[in-house]
Each structure stands twice: as structure tokens, then as C-alpha cells.
Length: 534
Image (cartoon, rainbow, N blue to C red; front, side):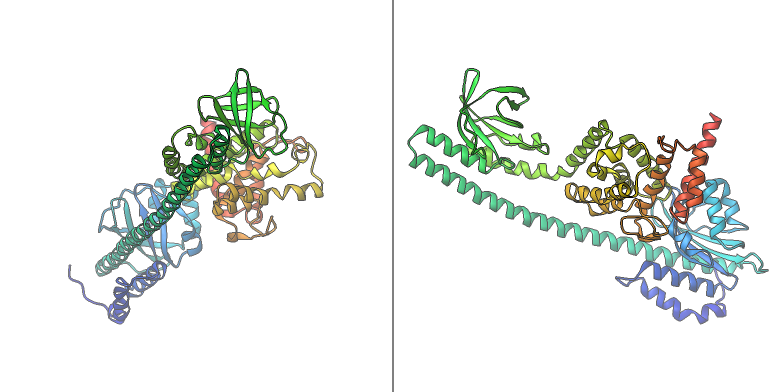
């Protein structure tokens, strides 16, 4: 369609050329580009006073503000809003009298209220929708001030299409470049993995040669059968992980005669008797602890002491009575097994939390409820599945540090003294250290560490303030406080839902993040209405 170039277009041609040149730049900042693009559009289209660039995920009904002029940028860009849309058509240019009122029926009340607060009053909005992929759209919107008498012209609609297409090209280019960068990173990582694997294989090969040479020397130099047995036992135990203490025994009826031992220098007895044998995990009358049993040959067994952190499945990849070839091959199986170690440790931690709950040291129901509400808030904030999963785990383990706090303080029914409270406060640091040690996840550890920080900077352990506190920690702080208030305590009773909501309202902006507080309160109010209905 033909339209005449107005003076604004002519005056801003250098700026348009600069923006178009930016499309091919490798490291162009997305925020800066969209801010410049939006400001240029407002300069060129004479009727426009304000504007927004919004990324819409049609599948998730999520709206994320990429750039804002004239509205509350801090509030709009901080959050992801959930709004349904029935007019997302590629290339569609739509004029709305009041776009927020038009979409009111497609959004939750709290989203409507927040958009009302975040946007400057407008007379009308001209929106151009451009399709990026199957579910992604960009909404390039320009607004006229509420008190203005201006209206958008046909030429303005056509110019807005031009800007919409520039925004689309830039984002698609950025996405393609990101894909290439990610692919390049993945290829580099795969190459690194292959190099590391090659090193491990070489090391395994050298170890195998050492073992074979050692076994050959033992066979050649030792004629006595018992000496040969002891040397083979000691060689094999050295190459088995976690084997700090081990016993070689010969089976004689109901007794086990000790032939050799490692790590039991002070053990003087010659015989052992089995107290319990449960799937090759053995306990003895004469020794403390538990031992894993593996057959060495028809008449001899090896027993290796295991600790509480011992993984039986991990150990079972070793078969000592098999040939050396199978033993060496089992190292490759161990490498594959270690990839899943973090997941196994998560299960161990969950089991430990449940076990601690039996001793009233840790309340798993409290943590599960906190995790449930934290995940709901995360969904409202537009977290993806990976981030929701991390938030859930952090909330579930947020008080795991209390395993290091004396139980007499944790189960105390009266109010804590200042000295006792200082001890309890250490659970955030202990929890951080436990997660860092066993899961090696610094982000998860930090979320747990800072869940008792306050929005006004008066929390602990470090007195972080506002957005210095990880977003996930701020979420857990609200959910945890609600569960704590609605749980009975002998020294102060129990809060009703309404009472707990009142406390959160009174403390938003001081103890709690105000946006997270509003989201959670709106959720509870909606849930309350549903409960009353049914």
C-alpha cells in the first residue's frame, strides 16, 4: 500500500539505517535494540505518545514486556503476565479503544489490577502482531494519551507494520544465532568429554597393566597357596572404591575363619559368626557396623565394611570372583553409574528428611506444603519447568540445615531465648553447606541460604535487601511464613487463613517482596472463593 513519507520519517532516516545495520551485528544487545526501535517508532509516528514491545507465547498465554516507553517499565519488565488472546494473526494491525478493558475477560483479576497500576491512562492503542514461530508472537503497540485529541492515520498503520517486521527479523536472527552458539558450545563440551574419557581410558589401561603385572609377579614369586590368596585379596581390595576395611575369610560350617584383614590392625580374634544376612549386607556378632559380602572362590569370601552413605548398587558393578577382564570392564560401568549419582543423592536426602521427621527434628509436611505453594507462585511468575523443579527442591530442602541444630531447641514448645534463636539462625548456613557438599549445586545452595533474608535488609544470614535476594528465596520466604503461621504452636496458637493473609499484607515491602506477596494473596483469595463455592 502506498503512503507518503512524513517529515518525521525523513528526519529519522539515519536512525532507521542505524537500526537496520544493527540486525547483522553479532553481539547487539536485545534490550538496547528494542528500546531504540520503540523510541524511533514513537518519534516517526506523530500520534504516538507511549508504546510497548511484548513477546507473547500463545501456547502458555504468557506476555513478557521487551521494551516500554511511557509506562512503568520496572514493573512490566519484571514479570510475566498470563493473558489469553483471540486476535493473534500474523501481520494483523488492530486499533483498540482501551486494550486493557478489551482483554479484561481473558486475564485473572490480579493481572488486570497490576496492568492498571503499571500503565499510563491511554485513549487508544494501535497494535501490530507478527509471528516469530508456531507459538511465539511480537506485539508492537503504540498508545495515544488519554487526554489527547489525536487519532492514528492509515499511514501510521503502514509504518507500524514496518517496525513490526524489523522487530521480527531482529528476534529471529537472535534466536538463530543463539541456536548456533548453543550448538557450538555443545560440540565443544562433547569434544571435552571425549578428551576426558580418553584420559580415563588411558588411566584405566595403565591401571589394568599394573594389576596384571602385579598378579603375574604374585603368581611367579609365591608358591604357597595361602600367601597367594592373601596377595590377590590385597590387590583387589586396593582397586575397589570405598574399601577401607576388608576381611578375607574361609567358610567352615557355621564359622568364618579369618585368613587376612585390611584396616583391622587391632583385631585379635580368628573367627566370626554372622548375626544377620540381608541380600549380601552382613552384620557380625563380634564386629560393629555392616559389611557387603562377595564370593572370592568356592570356599572363601570377602567382607568389606560399608558406611551409611555407601551405595550398594554402585558396589555391585564389581564382581571380585569374576576374571580380571570383567573387573577392568566394570570401571566403564562405574563411569556411567556416576552420571546418575546426583539423582541418587537427592533420593538419599529425601529419605534422610523423612527419617529425621520421625524424630521430630524436621517437619517434612511443612516442607512439602512450602514447596507446593512456592511452585504455584513460580508458575504465576512464568518459570519454565527446569526453574520450577529447582524452586521445588529448594523449598523442600529449605530447612534441611536444622539437622545441625540441637533437637532440644527445635522441639521447644515455649518461645526461644535470644541465644537459642542465634543458634537456630545457623540452619541457613548449614543447609547451604549440606547441599553444596552432596549435590554440588551452588544456585540451589544459595536459594536455601537466603530464604530468611528480608526485603528491607533486616533478615539473615547476610542482611541482603530487595532484589539482592534470589527471587526463589523471596518466594520461599512468603510460602514458608504462611505455612508457619497456619501451623499450631503451643506458645502462640495458630493463625487462620485470613489472619495469615493479613500479616503478609502488613509486611509486604518490609519482610516480603511486594509483588510475590500480591500474587500469593490473590491465589489464596481465589482458592478461598472456590472452597466456599464447593
